[in-house]
Length: 265
Image 1 (cartoon, rainbow, N blue to C red):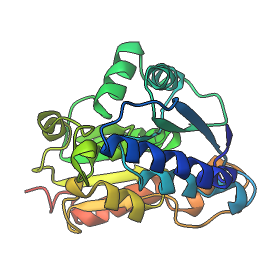
Image 2: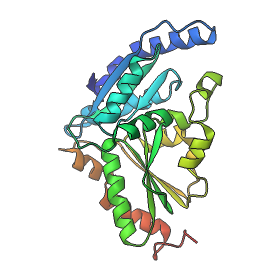
Image 3: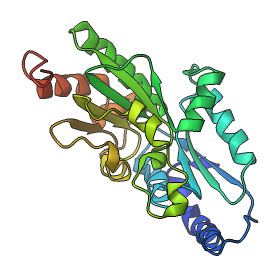
C-alpha cells in the first residue's frame, strides 16, 4: 500500500514479476506465483508529487490478464476485488482507492457484477453516455447527468472499473480476459450520440487503452488529470483540471449546440 504517486518506486520490481509470469504462461507452465494486491491511495492535496496518477497508467500498459488495474468506487467493490485477488495466482491487482471515507455507491450484487464484467450501467441509458473511472469522477458524472436532465437531455451513467477489459487484445492470453462482446455491446452501444469519459488518469492513456469504445472526435469527450496539481483538496484538483461538473456541463452543452440538441437528431 502506498500513496499513488509514491507507488512509482515499486514499478521496477513489479514488472520483473509480470515478465516472469508472462513467460511462464507462454510456455504453458502452470501458474506458480502468488497474487499481489497493490493498493494505491489517491490524494488531492499537496503537489504533483502526491497527485500524479502515473502508477496505474504504467500498469495499464501491461497485459491485462496478468495485471488487473481497477478503480473501486466504494468499499463494497474494493472488498470484492480483494476476494477475487486472493483466489487467483500470478496476478497483480492494482487498486486505486480514495484516502477519504465515502458513502457506498453500489450494493453487494452490483459489486459482484461490476467485478465480473469490468463495467456496470447505473440506471437507464440516454442520448449522452457519461463514463466514470474513479470514485470522485462518479460523483461528478451524477452531478452532470442531473444538470443535463434538467435541461431535457437524457443521460446514462456507466461506471468503468477495469479499463483493460475493453481494449483491443494484444495476444490470445489477453483476449481471454476481455469483457464478453455481447456484454460490451450492451454497455457501450455504438449508436450513442455523445460519449463522455470522466476519468482518474490522463485522457490519452485511457482513450488509447479503450480504443474500441472511441466514437471519434465528434462524438467523444474526455475529462481527467491534465498535469495541473498543487491544490489543497480533491475539489480543487478537479477544478484545476477542468474535471468538475461546473467545467464539464457547459462543454457538453456547447458540443451539442446552442439548443443542446443539434447533435441529437
